[in-house]
Image (cartoon, rainbow, N blue to C red):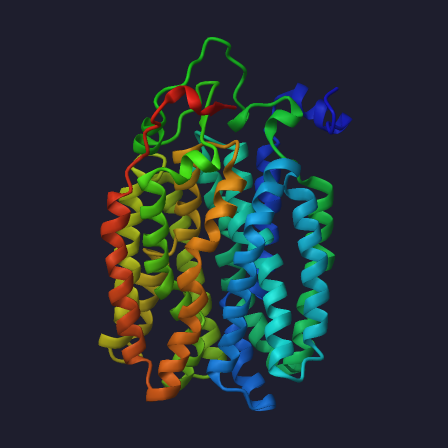
Amino acid sequence: MKPGTSGQDTQQRRKGSFFYGWTVITVLFLVEFIAYTTTGNTITLFFPKMSESLGWSVTQLNGAVTAAGLAGMLAAPITGPLLDRYGPRPVLAVGAVASGAALILMTQVQEIWQYWILFGFIGALGMGEMGRLSTGVVVSKWFIRRRGRALAFAASGSPLGGMLLSPVVGVLILSFGWRSTWGILAGALLIVNLPLVLIFMRRQPEDMGLLPDGDPPRNDMRAGPPQAAARTGPQFDGIETSWTVKEAMQTRTLWLMVVASNLVGFATAGVSFNQVPFFVNEGMSIQGAAFVLSASAMGTASARWVWGFIVERYSIHTCLSVMAGIRSLGTLSLVVVPYPFNIPTFVLGWGTFGGAFGLVQPIAWSNYYGRKFQGSIQGTMRPFMQISRLIAPFTIAAIFDATGSYDTAFLIAFGIAACSTVLFWAAKPPIPRNQSTCISN
């Protein structure tokens, strides 16, 4: 028996009737479902009551989002290689415990700096380990041919968590207060996520004597050119070309994706963490804003399922370009379409048709650069990709505080995001300078 392989794992492998990768995907779905209530844009539901109770401005409250982004940027280069080496179980377990402890301390916050530090800590461990980085890396190691649909299932935990739990969080805040609600979310994180991760998570199929997608071993298969997978959907031929971090950083494609991600990320982060204050400013109640969050999340969840199958059939750079264009139009609709008619246009453009970046971007990295060093590559590049997300929420809020309106801020976000469509289109599959220098799994 291989090291780290349990008797249960071996028995499952021999039966061959069920691929264990789908168990891993289900756990990731549930982890994201719960974690989204503490790291997603549901945090904006806390803003009105926290502002009323503590006297903090929207800009100050958004400062916590900036702190979380900064902490996540610093944590990602460490987390990524750990995912490659040790797998998601220890990484996610530590993240659950640390985030739960920080949420408990959030119930006692009195000063703005305490709020920034604690939410930054939650952002580094919750947003990084439990969501955007871990899920994409883990799915890429377990699936190749079915990577799109597998990640669609796993990543839909976040939007479904937003859809179903945002109204619950809104009711909890109104019924028990914002402090008690932070404590309730901490309990959910520790009681649900931690046991799931410790019991069911595994590093990669090879540790269980399996191949990606549950495919049977075939000794006569050879790898095709790496650019073919990104062009028409990933195929596994027994040997997969993987790029090291150094090799990946020498490609033009990587830096095009980094810049484009920053451009569309400005609108994504800026609008996400200001949409509740925006709709409340338009005259909507907190409960109404919570239901808009739910509707947008429902659209995002459905979009991920659709895009999960699309990316298995069409070029990844085309998918990214189209999605960036749709999301930028969703941002524009908040300004040019009168309230309340901008609610459906925003939900459709932002969520239903343009809300699958959390799915498509990780697939792009995996299709382009292989499985072996995905954690290291994505972790190393995340600080570069998150620059705009670091400044956008604070910038949007600051423009609102200065002008009393979100119109100017959202128009700026639209213009920046629209530019990303061209760069994503140009981010074609990279071609190794020397095929022999790349490492096969």
